[in-house]
Length: 395
Ligand SMILES: Cc1ncc(COP(=O)(O)O)c(C=O)c1O
Image (tube, rainbow, N blue to C red):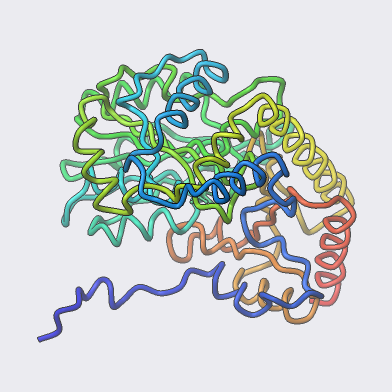
């Protein structure tokens, strides 16, 4: 008898990885496929981590994060959202991805399901499947008729997708890959429904500060949830402070999970890397707040460049994102996004993520899209887009 779970044996690399493995490490490929800026982590953050290393901070620390970091995170929420959080609700288990895993461990067992608003970053639903849950996607709709086009979420469809085995609703807002931002009214409706039905909300807010309006932060479930609602908010240092390789993020969870969270954080990873936590602490300083503006400017410039590019195309359109740093580009006539992305990397030397990776197999919306990350050097981004345009003229 095979001791390995059959669902584990069946796991397959997602489409982003399949395409990226074709061109990773080739300097002539312009990489727009991953969710990261090309900016290196700012020096004041790197210096803080170096100082921690040189000061011998190489030992185990509190499994939920060093006290000054959790305190600084509480201050950050106060500054960004005007929300006061008890420290018992904040855990730094490692990367945001580990926060996703932890929230799923808290909620689902084999046979349960998670309802996910899609298109969605594939690692999320793969983590749900690894946790033993089945996944139900509720897809956003692109309203091309509105000016500008916008994403809409049909709440009735979301609610009717939930059944007796639904343990969590997963929402990524601002979303990867769409840049869709959930409104406060939608959040209130989802919270009321989830409370009524005893379903947890896992709200992935890793792009919360990357919004294209004057606000400091996209609407957050933390602004409307009570401390003991079954609401988990995922957040990360990766995106706003250009720290993807550091593998550090945080989780805000129900207050009643104070002690279980200590156990889970230790059991999963014994907390985040110690010296990385000192870098993260520096990110939460005044200099870090200023860097958030730098990132926002880079993303705004990138978004404008893509918008201008789209204006010149007759086969590509998009719903302009209201947050995050992705363009989910709809390519008319494209039927297989993996083939198209492979063609782009092999022939045009530009790396994009195939839309089909972002939800249910054969979802026609996703299959007709590619995702690019525009938090890039403007000249490189322009060149990458020009390569996509040239490739399109040949197929
Ligand atoms: C929606 C979403 N959640 C979570 C993550 C993971 O962040 P981290 O790098 O901290 O694991 C990503 C990274 O792309 C993401 O797009």
